[in-house]
Image (cartoon, rainbow, N blue to C red):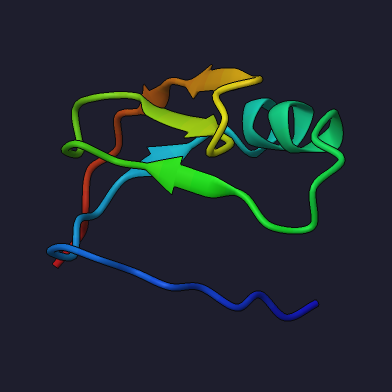
Length: 66
């Protein structure tokens, strides 16, 4: 599977439980979505331009190993 993205802003490292993310994406009928990220400690939200739906997906905490 390939995904095409358009990104604005700085890079952040954030993790999600894939089940919760897939649950939100499964009910969206659009081919494209907008995901909004504020910072690594805040949930992301998925919404369309008309705000007919808004999904909030909570992040998970993780540690990195250097």
